[in-house]
Each structure stands twice: as structure tokens, then as C-alpha cells.
Amino acid sequence: MRLRQICHFELNRMLDESAILRFRHLLEQHNLAQQGFATVNRQLAA
Image 1 (cartoon, rainbow, N blue to C red):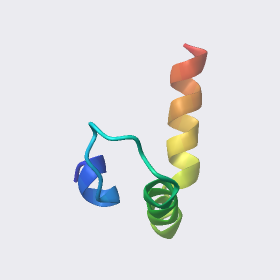
Image 2 (cartoon, rainbow, N blue to C red; image 1 turned 45 degrees about the vertical axis):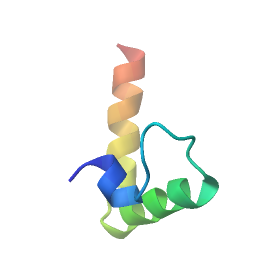
Image 3 (tube, rainbow, N blue to C red; image 1 turned 180 degrees about the horizontal axis):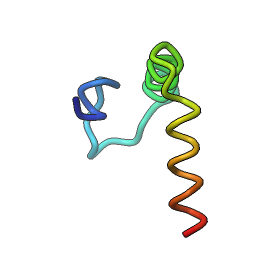
Image 4 (cartoon, one colour; image 1 turned 90 degrees about the vertical axis):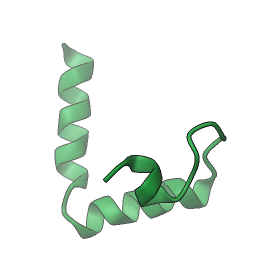
């Protein structure tokens, strides 16, 4: 599933706080937040 389908936003617009919060809650609901942050941190460290 694509990010914009999950958060219900179009990528050509500025994200509002509610879209970001919905995405965060979905990550937490499915226990994906820690894994996602770890992946981002690995990419930033590379």
C-alpha cells in the first residue's frame, strides 16, 4: 500500500498535521514505528 493511500493525501500538497498523525498512529497500531525509525537511522548513518 502506498503512503498517500494510507494517509489520504496527495503528494503535490503540503502535509497537514492530521495526515502525519494518522500515519503515525497506523505505524504504532501495526508495531512498525520502531522498525521504521531504525531503517531511517541506518540510511542516515550510511
